[in-house]
Length: 384
Ligand code: UDP
Image (tube, rainbow, N blue to C red):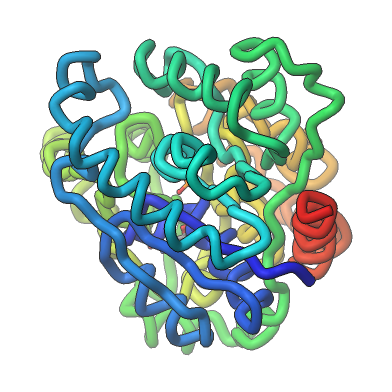
């Protein structure tokens, strides 16, 4: 196994970071992780034995997805300091593995300095719905000029890369995120009352759970609209605003009050024990209004052996097969979501059948073992 320097922009725990957490822990003997900002992700990496170094610059960290060219130019000196620091460090490793877009920019710009093979794990759908024009152009040129290998988290992400850069989508390895089934096996979901009591959830109501950071495109507001249409059901929102979406979080509370459903919504905040929270649910919802690049929460819901209703766009359609291992609905459609919930609530046998197939698919198609094996293979190839 070659030595690897991993770079990730975030100190927060989003999907890309959970994917890196597993990989960096697996490769900890011959790797190190550079984070471009500090946060709880560092402690999680260190707890698993990964070596971590933070190379941060507050002004660069604050540049947002839709930043203007002028805003990008202001932070150029900070960018170059970080580029040099990462390159100096990368020279001590065989491969430079970039896990996010800012990591891509800072790691790839330093290629003439470090001259190491560069892998980028693309976790994004590279379209204008998700990113600014300037950012997309920067990504396009860096991928063309300074990245040796791209791996993507779904075919949907690969197609967006192809459209942006002209690279043949079929030539890009798709490596799905993997979910650790053992974390779900450790939770006793049979005694629902005890589990819910431990989590502070009501024992005797039908619970729908929506997992993910609070952000407009994750669509928690759609789930609230759906809740208002349905009776005898509670909604649990697990997640926090991780990247400055506090106004959206406040708006969700206001929306719940205005809809008269505040007593049926549980804002759980960020939770570490997602397997336990998932097993406490009757159904898992996914409500993203924009195409989801992958959607770990969907596979986690499947691994928890719960029926999953998901928004049919992006990588989600590579995970969920409608009526076989889950239920797909049109994104952003609160009525369709409500109908799907009603269907599964009124037909427990169907819900159980979907959950059983989901459980099996999560283990066979999206195992952490397969993810790690394919990822280490890609790193090995890059080093040659
Ligand atoms: N997650 C978590 N605690 C929470 C909410 C979410 O640990 O309170 C985890 C969730 O289990 C999943 C990840 O955050 O592994 C989110 O990944 P996903 O691919 O669904 O979305 P992304 O963050 O990449 O947009």
